[in-house]
Image (cartoon, rainbow, N blue to C red; front, side):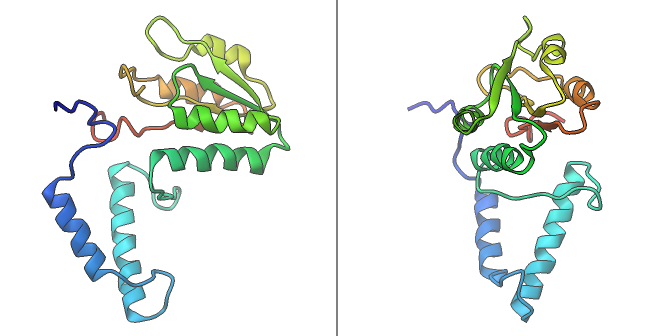
Length: 186
């Protein structure tokens, strides 16, 4: 069989597996515990977390990384969490026409809970239409979702243009799922 879906999953690299096994054996303590094993695990976690923030060019004093088991879990946590926490500001959520199923499923779930879901048109180049986004944004918009890299054809969104467009809406969050971009584009 020829396997071509390496963006979805792929065989683990030996170095990665060896590192995982080593970490699991050495840092087994609960990071929230005060015993020695917990302190060692917390110290290791903080070093790794600082490395991740550095790789992403993020200031550790301004940003927090929340680790999940998958991008699907991350998207669900963000989308449902924003709606549940901030729907007093509005119930409107916008998404590109080419979101991952994990985003679409979460939005569909929230639509059944009363969210107002709309898809923003796509330009000829496969990118979210900034002009259509501007037309659809209101003071009641809680979320705009557009994956950085579309998982089927690889379109790279104008994430800076999207962020700039929503910047004058203080109650609007931007979910930029960068899963397909990590390790592939700067």
